[in-house]
Image (tube, rainbow, N blue to C red; front, side):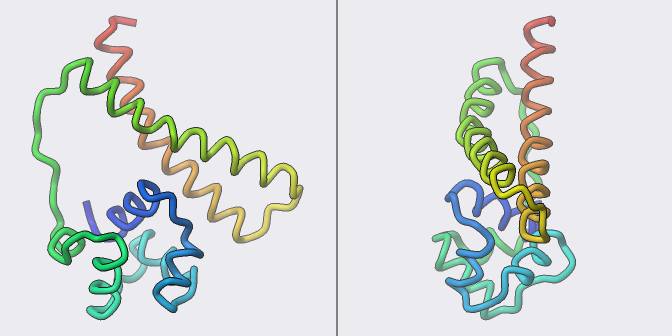
Length: 135
């Protein structure tokens, strides 16, 4: 997992928008978006600020850690999926908000991109559950 993926994960986990994070760091929302998309990386000062903001180590942010491979059982997979339920609820609310607005501008496009990315992360868990249930 690279720094952009970690930032996206931390924001999602903490319910923080790109705009909110950008405001807290005194940068633009586009800068946060570029970090998450891997188009650029934060400088040392911003890495420290991100570490403080999310209360994680700079090592966690900077080191490209690959998850340790371990066999997952159905209980663990279902728990991981259920942990995503709040993400799905958030996506529903954001889609209603976008539909109410009726205009898909650049900000909404980025929000939609984040929603699709979240759903893409959830789909493998659903597939694993299905395979373990022999569906």
